[in-house]
Structures are given as structure tokens and as C-alpha cells.
Amino acid sequence: MAPRMLKFVTVGRQLPEKREAAARRTDFDEIFDEFDPVRAAEQAGRCSQCGVPFCQVHCPVQNNIPDWLMLTAAGRLEEAYEVSSATNNFPEICGRICPQDRLCEGNCVIEQAGHGTVTIGSVEKYITDTAWERGWVKPAKPRRELDQSVGIIGGGPGGLAAAEQLRRKGYQVHIYDRYDRIGGLMIYGIPNFKLEKQVVERRARLIADAGVRYSLNFEVGRDASLADLRRKHDAVLIACGVYKARELAAPGVGLGNIVPALDYLVASNRKGLGDTVPAFENGSLNAAGKDVVVIGGGDTAMDCVRTAVRQGAKSVKCLYRRDRVNMPGSQREVGHAEEEGVEFVWLAAPEAFVGDDADRVTTVRASRIHLGVPDSSGRQTPRVIEGSHFTLSADLVIKALGFDAEPVPTLFGTPDLTVTRWGTVKISYRTMMTNLDGVFAAGDIVRGASLVVWAIRDGRDAAEHIDTYLSAKMAGRQTAVAAE
Ligand SMILES: Cc1cc2nc3c(=O)[nH]c(=O)nc-3n(C[C@H](O)[C@H](O)[C@H](O)COP(=O)(O)OP(=O)(O)OC[C@H]3O[C@@H](n4cnc5c(N)ncnc54)[C@H](O)[C@@H]3O)c2cc1C
Ligand code: SF4
Image (cartoon, rainbow, N blue to C red; front, side):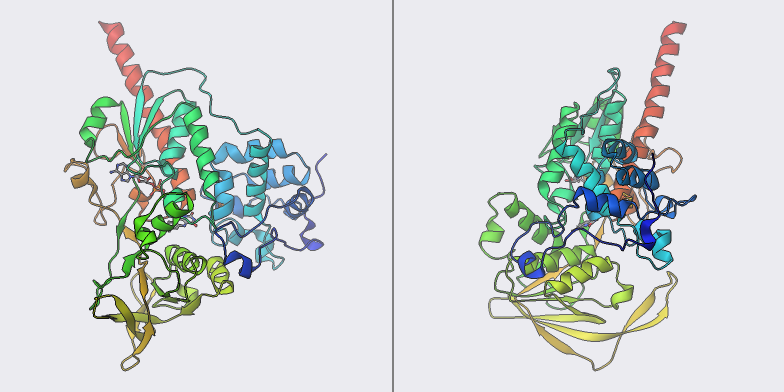
């Protein structure tokens, strides 16, 4: 029998236990504990079971949230897992790192009514972590093997989700990745305190167990061209993400100890994974004992400031040219960072960097900003306030201004691949195919820097379109043979 739901009137919103900031500062472990079964059922039972669930509408993979909340409240966890994994390849990852305040939870009806949202992400994580513990998570098993093969460039969430879906249908799937580990930014970008690496690694193993082949340290453009992959496979999916860091234009930006965010985060993640990282050991990508200034206001900047705190920085400041309400990063992450001791310098932009005799940065010169009238995108334009200069001491400056696409047509040796004016790969939104026959694209390389859950959605959609394309190709071949 269905349990009584709609408990939001009598049961308050509660997240799993959050570790004290003082303890969090000293390690890279995740900051939230797991729900216990009673608390998970109680929190799931707060759902109002809306006829039109806005949480689902605003979830990029359209998770059937009310149903798995109802099943969790009833203690029917295996069924909850089946429902939740039917629409999402990595529910426990999304439960951890989706910006729920902007997606499902931000649109929960009881949140809008002032009762506090259902803790959707934490329940989603709880369901799938339990499924892993109890052995319910199994590799995809195709009903029949097909001869056709698909080559996927990039083993991030987009490539992996597509690979798993294609494997379920029986295709032979081969992922090529230039990193030495599978997972893309889930391994080397997002820090451990948001997403522990073993959570990604067990997914990568599961997909390999389903029969997907990985070629690591394999860079398309260096070890093979796109044309080589097209000859080898019946279809190719480009899911290579966006990695060209946006640059700052200010005098002194070339000084030593001014580093790109991803270099800094990759070094820290590698260190956590047990690799030897010379740039970390020699201090150039290590914040220990330093005055750190991070420039930017997105999620990457938040990850940098919180990593610097954990590495034992003397002070950590985040310089952002807009204010708190206008920043692109999740408000939840800002809250965590503030608790951990990060100082935010809102409405401020760097003007120049000053160095010592060894050309290493010592000072950031900045100006205060006033937000002017909105531009064509609707965002207020930042304007420097004349004469408002100030300085910040810094022995490590991290540039976290976002990412653009690398020049994919040149890199892949395929100048005829069409890209947009932002350099992202252009696809038909009806088929997800590029202008090259049999070449599809998904994830950040199509959308620009986005979210894991959107990459999963794209990977799943691309798998469907590739299946349609390959089925038609096979049917065409069979008709031609029959006609001979
Ligand atoms: C620091 C940081 C923190 C983030 N935090 C969050 C978060 O909290 N929540 C969230 O939802 N999203 C977050 N994101 C965004 C999220 O990680 C990305 O949107 C998502 O990973 C995109 O998936 P993807 O599969 O398109 O690309 P990626 O994850 O970038 O994977 C692309 C893969 O392609 C490989 N590749 C690239 N070029 C080649 C080539 N030439 N040959 C072979 N392989 C190649 C790369 O090595 C990589 O493994 C964060 C991003 C960053 C940078
Ligand atoms: S996938 Fe993300 S947006 Fe969708 S329900 Fe889970 S946490 Fe919310």
C-alpha cells in the first residue's frame, strides 16, 4: 500500500548530516554523510505528488521523481532504483553534484509554497548508493550482439552515457580518450569533496564490464584523425568537452604563479588519486602557505577556492566582477566556501598584476565595479568605478574565467567539420548529426561549458539517433543484398 505522502506540513526539510567546516578544511572527503533509511523515507514522504511535477520538468533527464520518492517512502528501494536508473545512467553522481537549487529542487512546488523543497538530490544519491551496496547495479547486457561499431571521442559523462546506451542495444563501442583515466571532468575537474573518485571509477568499471572498450592516452588529432575513426567505425560520436581556458587581459598576467584553473584542479585531483605530480611537489600548483586569489564567479572558481583552503593556504580570496546574486556559480557552493573560510570580494576586477625580482606575482591591483544597465543578454554591464583602486597580496593567482571549445576541425584534421561562431560543433537538432555523414556530437562540445546532467541527457539522445542511423544503414544494406 502506498505510504502517506505530503508530509511537508509536519516534517521539516532536512539534508543528510553536513560535516563541520573545521573538519572539512583538513581533508578532501565529501562534505555530506549518507541518509539513514528512516530519514530517507521520512524526507521522501514530504513530496506532494503533484499532478504536473515541475521538478521532473526541470530535470534535464526528466527523472520520474515523484515515483521514486513514493517508492523510497514505502521502503521499496530496489524498485525506486529501477525507476531512477531508467532515465539516468549516473543517478548517484547527479544526486551529488547537480545544482539542484537551479533545477529540480528549485522548482519543487512545496519550495515555492515556502515549506522548503524535498531533498531530491540527497534521496537520489541514497537510492543508488544503496543499490551499489546491495549488488543491484549490474552491467548492461545486450539482448543480441550487432556487428556495427561506434567510436566515441571522449570518456566524460556524455561519452559514457552514450556508450552504455549503445551497448545495451548490442553495438560494439570503443571510447578514445586523451587522459589516462576514464571520466573526463568528473575525474580531473570536479574535486573529491564534491564527488569522490571511487564513485566515478566504479561506473567506469561497470561500463567496461558491459563490453565497452577504452583506449586511454589516445588523442584524436595526434594518434588518429577523425577520418581514421570514420573508416574504422560505422558511426562516430564527438564528446570531447571544452578545454580552452578563457584568458585575462591585464598587464602582468604572464607572471609566474598565475595559473589556469584546470591545471590547478587536475594537479590536485591527480595528487588525490595517488599520482606523482611534480608541479604540485615543487609548489607551483600547490596553495599550501600562500595568499591565494581566485578570479571568477562560476563553479570552477568555487572548486578552486575550496581546494586551496584544503591545501592549507594562508588566505583565500575570490575576486568577482559582479555581485552575489548575479554570479553564475551555485549559491549553495558559495555558502560552503564561506563556511570553510573563503573571503569573497564582490564587484571587483583585476587591473594589473605586480611581481617580484624573480617575476613571480606578489600583488593583484584591482578596481571596484558598478553594475550598469543590462546589455542585450539581459545581464547588467560591469563598469569600473574611477579612482577605486585597491590591492591584494597574492603568491598564487588562479584564473577561473570559463572555457571555450578548442579548434576541433583543425585538431581532428577535419577542416570541413562545421562549427558555430563560438567554436562548438554544429549539429542538426533533429538528428544530432554534424555536417559529416555518420558523425554525431554531444555534451559540452555542442552546448559550451554546461553540466554533467546535460551531458548525460545529450549522450542518451545521441545514442538513440545513432541507433536510428545505423538501423537504417543496416536495412539499406540488407535491401541491396536482397536485390542482387
Ligand atoms: C572545475 C569544474 C567543476 C565542475 N563542477 C560541476 C558540478 O558540480 N556539477 C555539474 O553538473 N557540472 C560541473 N562541471 C561541468 C561538467 O563537468 C561538464 O559539463 C561535463 O563534464 C561535460 O561532459 P562532457 O562529456 O561533454 O565532457 P568532459 O567531461 O569534458 O569529457 C570530455 C573527454 O574528452 C576527452 N578528449 C578531449 N579531447 C580529446 C581528443 N582530442 N582525443 C581524445 N579524447 C579527448 C577529454 O580527455 C575528456 O575525458 C564542472 C566543470 C569544471 C571544469
Ligand atoms: S538528475 Fe539532477 S536535476 Fe534531475 S532529479 Fe537528479 S539531482 Fe535533480
